[in-house]
Image (cartoon, rainbow, N blue to C red; front, side, top):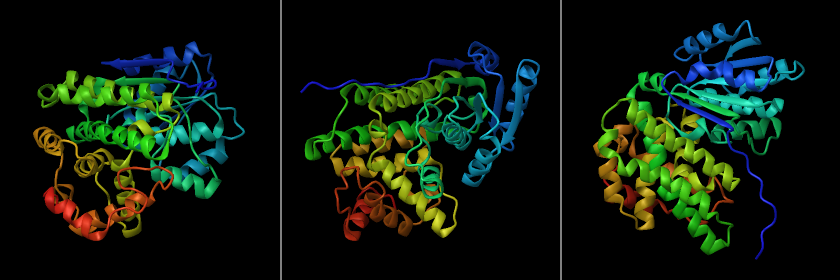
Length: 356
């Protein structure tokens, strides 16, 4: 079968390493942008954003705002929709980058990603977090945010200064790719879903980078940060090539999204995204018949949580998230099948793996 024309977009420039953030002016100037909106966090990342704004203030028409949640996205959209913003620069953690991508999508403007942590692949992917997408769908009818960063500037000295827990979450995100690709292969066999071998191998290469470098990743230094950032960027490119999040998001992410929904409904703070993805990958590896003990040993060696208690969660929440997971993306076939797990199967799963 001959396929038709395929078009995909990837970041045009990637800077990563110490002082990568100092290249913001170069990126903005090379594209002839004038009106720049800087989006940042309210505490940790704001100082970096303020330093950048100060360095480019005389060159461009700049404005800086901090983000909150989807309400802020809607308010910012109303505020700037008629003000001809040339580009949005997101400087911050995963939530900041996601909000920047969502706002850029709504304003039909390019976005530049300047992550201050490396906790998940949102720093380079075209998509936004599940709950943010859900809210945008409900409030604005936006079916899918798709905004590939024009450029990525990952300053490893800044990322290294963040608490190690965030880097470990990024590693957890990457470990989940082994399950995501297996689920995609399963959907291709069972449902005839289109499968991109190139995108799948690129995603798996990020997983393999982590597995091959466990000893290096035990140490929190610039080299280990580089490894994780490079792998996360590779994941984002894999999604851009696939035209979906399939190569990087399967049943392990559905479990994570289910937990996010439960956290919102029951008003508790969930663990970091990558931490939950890693635990989900551990459980789904068992269901796939993969080497789940090897994965658990890697998680333990690096310091990622492998039990509900280590995540600050109770047994019932884990079970409920497992029961809900298959309904998160009913269009996406995974090892959970169309009907999901029974309560007995979910409880046996966490018992066998010693999760709770």
